[in-house]
Length: 496
Image 1 (cartoon, rainbow, N blue to C red):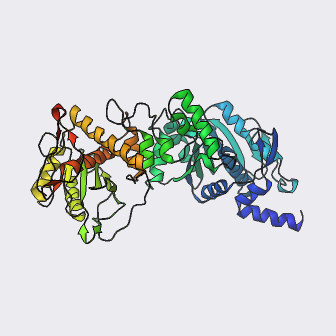
Image 2: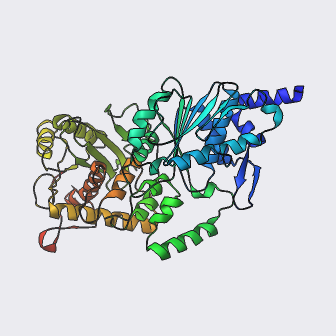
């Protein structure tokens, strides 16, 4: 080995992107030949994130080279981090074998320069395993096997298409818990809106678990432009009468990828997408210290006068197996989401949180769902927080009754709110969790599909309808009216 070759090996040891970009090759199906793996900027960034984080979940559009990228990283570990044990999982055994074959990982390995292979030749070279002289190995499994090893790297390809990812995670994640890494990479499968993969990604996106999330939209591919995207859009819409397949295969945002199919949804996911702008929750010294409270827009003054806000609250029982209690703070004039709260709070605690947040937002009135545990929450707020105006629903009673009629009124107004703001391109939604729940509401049942939550969606809708029922100085705060029984427009008035 020359001194230059030794220097190159040293650079490869400390920099996987240098190794991949300089020495790895991938097969180009269009040209029918192997070619250098020249990393796009997004691929280079993703590789850096994979190297820096133990747990990485990658949600992507189709054909962005992610399978090649994670296999190249596995090869780097096998050569430069011996004795690495790499476990590669795919849905079926034939697919797992393909990832390890001469068409993929072995093909990359065989095209490395000879000086890099010294001491790294294969001593075991079977369909399911390749092991190097340095003690590193890679094994390929269908998702029904592979839990008897200790791994330094576990890769699950097309993870959202795995029939029982939860079972696989229970079996495989312990294999890397002594310091190894795990990578889940997949496009979205819209037939399973509450899959294990999507739950992991959503929680990672919200920084609620130990995973690091990466999203790669369709346009990171350097050969794709808007004209290419429009051609895909026209083709898919002409064949399917919807854009669901477009958002599944070529999403522009995590929301598009994770949203359920839209044909039977009460609020068009396209409207929600136009109205959505993700904001990071603020760390404010004067905000109420409540676990789970996320403030995107703090209380504001306009010309020295407090801007008015309204609260929508959806109570739950508050035990570990119940839904979350959820609350949304909304700008009364614009209908923009300003803060959200969600957690397993029992009724009296949730009532205290409503009171504290109301006080922080200039004594914002609250529309509280009064079904079931809502009665206890309303009583708690009424007894202990005189500054909180509890708004009356369409039947004139305190709180909102989510009967069949109440639900229809609630989501009719909510859908109109998004439709109108989508037409103007106004951003009124900032919580990713609110986005996914609102996009999931079924058009017939007016709730989320089985296994999914809709508490944040309900609290958003309650806050919006509360805008019509609140009054300031004996004048309705909003121009729109909520249709009451008999189809007659009516606005219930109260004193602020």
